[in-house]
Image 1 (cartoon, rainbow, N blue to C red):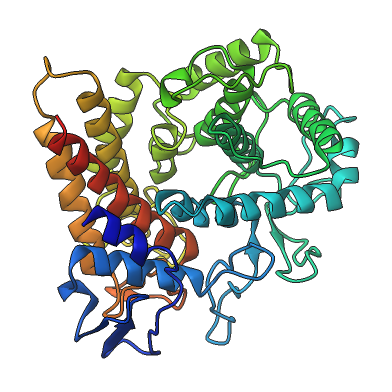
Image 2 (cartoon, rainbow, N blue to C red):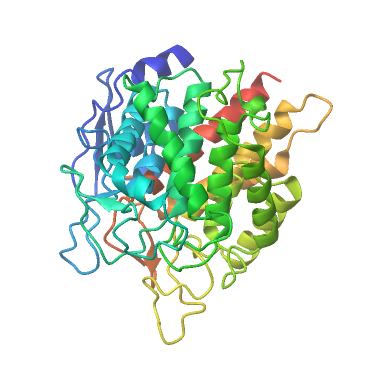
Length: 431
């Protein structure tokens, strides 16, 4: 059966899914035709194939992903552009289906974008003041999907977590034996060095940015944690060694002083359990548990308690209390926030990772039933919020989804959540 699954995944993009959400027709690479009235009634493995196919529909020839295919014709911002962060998270699904070549292509695109605007990195590294929301020297969070040109000046572009995620995942892939850098390695490592210098001179651990939600400026725990995780990956002090079968040292390629790790850790500890001065908790703090695993067990537990107690709603998670984005009642925002199905995916992933960690600790520990049950429950809640043809909306307001369907990184996180839980099942079967 496992071999058959690998054969189906040999070309997961070779499927036919018609537009609309009333009827689903999928032709698997084996030639098998699957017809169902609803994505929710499909067998689990076929759900995975369908969800991945929708994600592939947003992938561009250069390896990037449109945030969604919404062109802005019904109001609001158009999403058929590149967000750097969204690309890096959207391509995560490829790792979980074994398509590392496609993930590497996406990260090489991010390198190309950084190289294109390298003058901003080197210019920013020379300054010692806050860069501002739309300062010319800030790397823009959004670019055109073909030309890679900047498209929006009035934006909260100073987002430190983008650099943190980039450093973290490139280091992770290299430790797994993948050549993310490409052919111009010497020049790219100089670029990485310049990024670290940029982060240092903009005082990533103490000065504000606009964070994942592009709001602020404030000091965000999620941004500090992202950069700390990225630097820790390259500092190579053993924090992440448990993730790898063999040790592939990185510290000689991009030396990171121990002081950087210490000041980042101190800053993160000062900010937690809050996300920022104005937000006692935030959905994006889940990133500190996964993918970064940069907080202590006690801190992770507190984040989960806060998120599950205060942010979980019927159709998803609110980003934070009083969030005005797509709020159903701007005059009375608390309790009327938009609900993001993405949050269900993130919680499912986190609980699957916690379950896997418990299973790895050995047979003397009981099966982590609570973690597994929560991972299952949140995945089920996510699937209940997906469209009839298997797409994850960005958010719900007043019980209705907005027009960004699917949201690329939410679609990716569904694949990650699905596969993470499957790996728990496989581990339990071999125990």
